[in-house]
Length: 202
Image 1 (cartoon, rainbow, N blue to C red):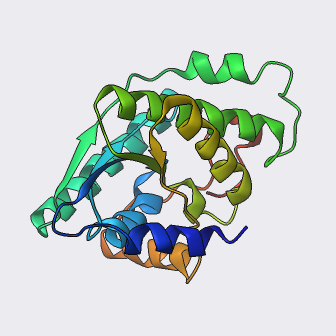
Image 2 (cartoon, rainbow, N blue to C red; image 1 turned 90 degrees about the horizontal axis):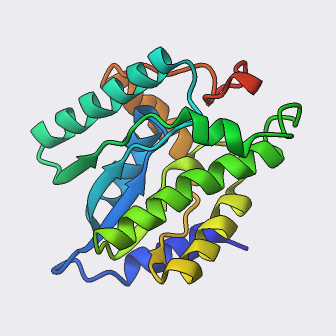
């Protein structure tokens, strides 16, 4: 399925004079930099920072600090963007990973992680009456875009809230996120998050 084509169709059908509200799960500041820039003209965006997979906690806090730093920079540049923080729930990720500890990076453990983060985002979006929920995860070439969108669409049906189908890495999206990270002097981590595969770049 061409998720980039579907993504653009969704964006082109938005009423720019009456923007919908999007709760956007962000995995980190660098990935969100391009996605926020790309979506800012189409939605009123709130970043939802829920990443229980990140270990250790010091690393989690460092990445969260960078996310808040980026949002403040973008606000100073005139972006209309909000932020919702979450508790550090590493135990939820570890529970979801039981039996999958030796899975390769990009396998079943990662799919559980995608589900955990998107589930939390969908529930919060429904609770707060957002129009859409989505994620920055598809900007990374290391993430399974098909699986992310499949999970998002299943949650759309379950919670009756629209999922923003995406493939943000297309059209050099990932490269643009690297360029923006350099522009804003953002910390770019060298592993995705969990200690099971902490030598894999984001």
